[in-house]
Length: 271
Length: 265
Image (cartoon, rainbow over all chains, first blue to last red; front, side):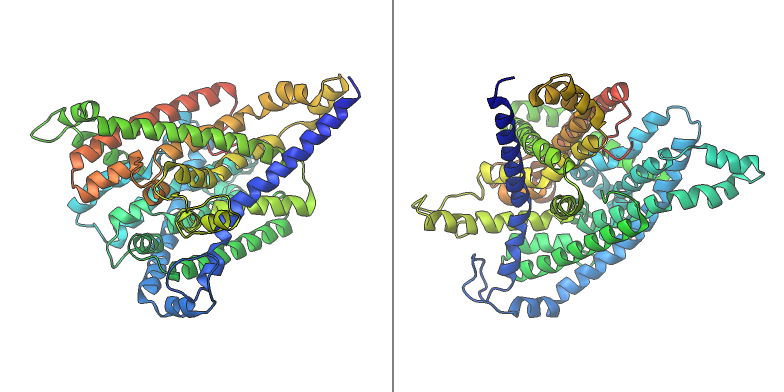
């Protein structure tokens, strides 16, 4: 190895670190630009804003559209996350633990709804919901979101089940526990953290989902993403910036709480 | 569970069924798909954009994941946070941010104008380039996270062994690092490519006349009310995605146990 060797590698290393910093800024900065705009005095989007005020936050607080959209997103998101957690767990336990033929293929099928483009599912669900007379109602979008969110719970719970040995449950059953008691006292406590994570995944997904909501909701049941979308297409005032800044703060706060919780419980890396 | 499968498979079968309708059962929609160049242009364009986005994500994500995987303590939490916050932030919101950055009187044009780098505002919205920059931004965490989890799972003694045996960093990377992180890498690539193919929000807002497949489907269904045509395009998208997904599933089953979402191990 010649003398220039180590120096070259050190330069390469610094270059990689510099690239990382640039990429992280690229991930973060554009979204942050929204925050100053939300305090703009003007009713059009310019950066930097010519003057600052709270008028868009007042407008947001007074807006009935936003209030009902947030409410709708919660009315849809919470039951979706609950249903997805139940269904995802019910699918994961037999597929990972049981001896089901073609378990691998079935697992792939369970994951498919979240991998395949939502627009295709939306195009298919729309006429079905019309025929069932459910179009525009809560059940329509609730069912649609549950289909897409169940795989998220399935993935996290499956991972947790693979993370410990089946001999735990076997031991319980050898000691005389029924299948149900073994599940309730052994399996359930072990997979509970994964179920909570899956629940959060499912809720966030439903809270963010636009395409199914666009096709399956009506103006009375429209969710927050759909309202933001409609506003983006028809009126571009900083009220959207105010709304998104609020959501952004909430997201960051939830992530920090989640990271702190996971560190206290000692789950290891917050990933 | 059966109900969910019904709610998933039934709509998809219906889409395929509808794609053959028109005046009775017909192949007319698919014939139009092949003969009318507008559809072919959209399909080819979508493929090209998805490929470019996947490659750019790969090139940017790999070094970032490598640097993050070597961090400990506060720096690790900070960098991970910088990846996770965008990951958890709504796509509508992040696309809106790019709209603000890219518009004629937007942040980027302001900076470039005041620096004297350009004399008149650039047209970045409704231009394919702006859309692709925003798409890479949105897809990047989906590439970083699987690669990162593969790197965390890497056995460091292997790298040390390679360096003790006299391999320089480049050779260590090529013969040890790259092959061992391949499962995470390929999972990220397939995920980003599939998501890009069916991506709607960013192309719809920033794409302008550069239409991607999902936007085409939505236009056909909602604006033109041409459900058979929307179904035909959807079926093509469905088949392509299924083939990619099944192909990846086979590959990963042979290689190791890696799941598509990187969490199944």
